[in-house]
Image 1 (tube, helix red, strand yellow):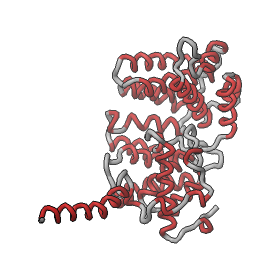
Image 2: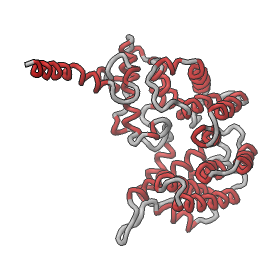
Image 3: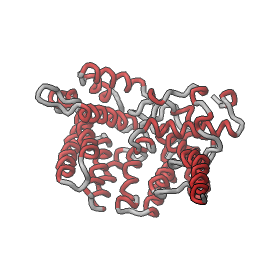
Image 4: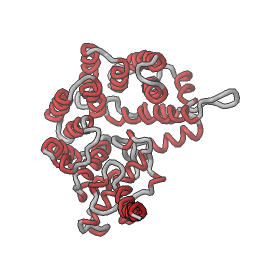
Length: 372
């Protein structure tokens, strides 16, 4: 009889505990005072999860139109014209090269080709064949190879090294075709990480970038990896690199947000304590990032990268109103850290968005009180 009562007691306890445990699954459940399902992001005009664009961090209508045309028709000429009309030193060219390369890479993954099927991304091969001296096509091809190496092979294997060596040659060709363009050297930063460049090799590469674009945010984000613990650097080295770049950043530059990226690169594997995200180091880094986006130009393409990372940290720190402010700027596009580290970037972003809405409403907010 005692055993029967024990079994009944355990069953009753499971009915109480299981819903609680389910709500606490995942990484960040403790940051929301209300359950995410209690509030509807659609009430704020946010885009449905299935319609979120995972290709880019923020809107670029010209790029979206060109990508749609190229992928629909298989004609590369619109992409070539787009890059030909984009200034070499700016952030826009770097992001568009990444976008075109990423589109071709994902197409190839989806359609590797066969006896009776043309492989995806064929338009990039045609581009390189028909315009071998086009610096834009050369830069996209180099970035395409880098993305293929990271997506389709394992670092340290022969396959990975072979693709990366080919990518390094492609970067050299692209650099020769456009001597003042920093993008081939920025692309090579990923190769340096994959092939394990020596410090001297990395420093030489970094000087080539600084000579061409000393305040390039994309370049600094790529270089930051080399100073982090996971790539044979250290937390202190990464923080020093990021803080030095932020200190010399010109007015309006997103480099003021670089320390927040350094903090993100060194987050503990598991840290569910909201207080950690209110610590002095994290708060200072968030303050720098907030200052950067508040002073950003409306057309700065790197501001969206910063806002996405800010959303992550602000939700973790339970700073709901500020998190909602970031959402009003970036909702609809999720091609940025930290979402791209997930197998389903749209779902990861949607979770944080739901938490932000739930926290905002639990503290008296509603669609009518949201600025903008």
